[in-house]
Image (cartoon, rainbow, N blue to C red; front, side, top):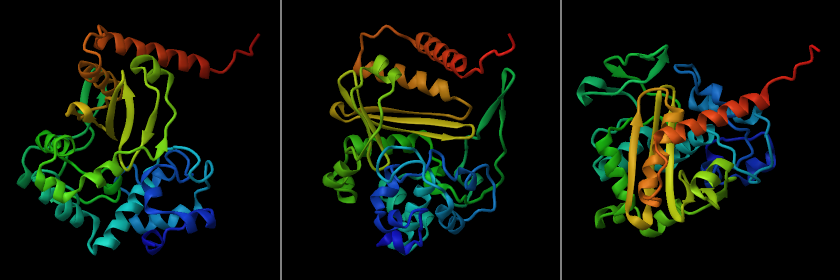
Length: 305
């Protein structure tokens, strides 16, 4: 009902009729990977959330509805508008009212905000030769962005650790905010994700899945619940090991895809395989070898002879 109220129309009318709020959150809609992302990035652009919802009907599916996992961002924007309709306030207002304030996330920001009032704020960077260069300089007023529900919240490390503790060891007040049953639903598997060869080799993983905004997999026999954050010049990871009531968070304001992979792997091994002797260099070299092999496989054959 709430999805239909948002005026969402998919390319296939049957999918439109059967789309649930849960389908917006599990990356199983049939949209191709990254489908429609040019309506979100690069920023700034002129697309509104209403434009994105209208544009969905023109994106042809890459596979059947609910048949496989394929990451997309647009439907999280739709989910934000569904929440706004249900909550009677814009998405940004809801985040402050329903999430930041109850949990005491005092420095988390979404929507338009004043940089100087918040204090020190990290800016995204990119590589230029051997240097890291700011991608942009934030002005005194940080503007609201259309993509916020898909990945537009800026928090500091202290607030991210509060967020992590809320999931690992919730207080009675936090369980009033979100019950144990609701938490279980969010962090339970709803869509299977293929386990990569790298993950099988490095982590001895057998299963990987997506919940409602969370990934989950077994790492060396330990259950992990986690997610990454990826924007231009900003990379992050939050990892939870619920059975151990442990976890970690790190955030990098630079182009750091491989660095995030390596750092996340080394850190999780402290919990799941403390005797593991592979360090940063080993994982970095393994990624480099895999990249070279992938490049060689993709190279066009030499037909000059």
